[in-house]
Length: 139
Image 1 (cartoon, rainbow, N blue to C red):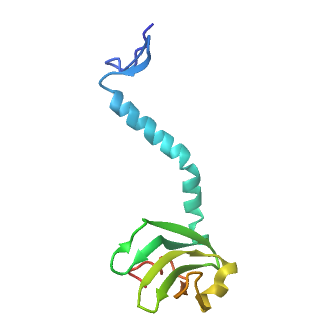
Image 2 (image 1 turned 120 degrees about the horizontal axis):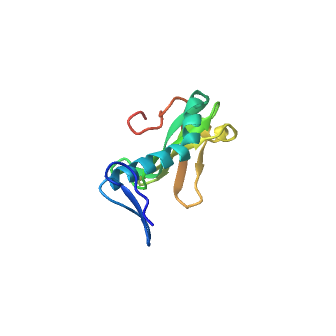
């Protein structure tokens, strides 16, 4: 049994399943785009509500010399929250940073320098309240 579509018969249903001829790559691309739009329907809805969120730079491990070592991303913080960069330092001047979003409930951490759980290291939290204010170019 054969199923033909289009002027050149782009699709055939053969014994082994669905196969494509010359138009196949276009159909595959179209299918991928449709699937992406269906999966990102919630993404579009979230973007329409964007003014309710603060957008922050996120990096789990960063140094001034090497930049972000574990990949950067964007996080969204609710209104009243902040962007944060945690500076983890020791007495030799080593500075490792972690950038992320900080919830309203955690804003009290923004005013404290505290010892870390690793002996000899201190954590200083630097909070800010504008979109991407914790991005390395904006610090």
